Image (tube, rainbow, N blue to C red; front, side):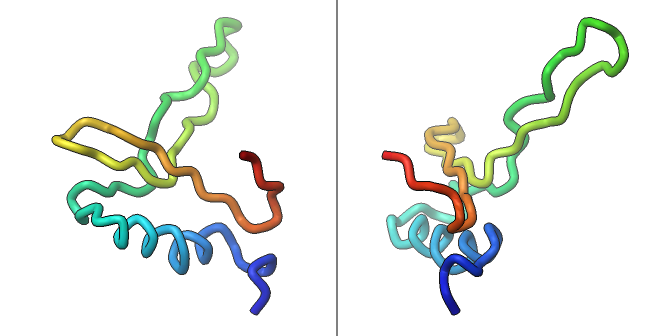
Amino acid sequence: MDKKDLTEQEIRTRYITPAIQSARWQPHQIREEVTITDGQIHPDGKAPRGKRKFADYVLYHHNMPLAIVEAKDNNHPRRH
């Protein structure tokens, strides 16, 4: 199967999670689908808040968030 045909979840399962684990991050240091914002505040009163934002992975060291890893499917351009 071509990588371009993989979904974001498949990329995470096949490549990102194993890479994080091989870098010796322990399971208790890795959290997936973590809410990082409650959403934009709408001052017009039509809706209290916008859509919440989630990080695909947050890596913790001594219970402090140290890194956010955002996964994308393979159809997004690479940025360096």
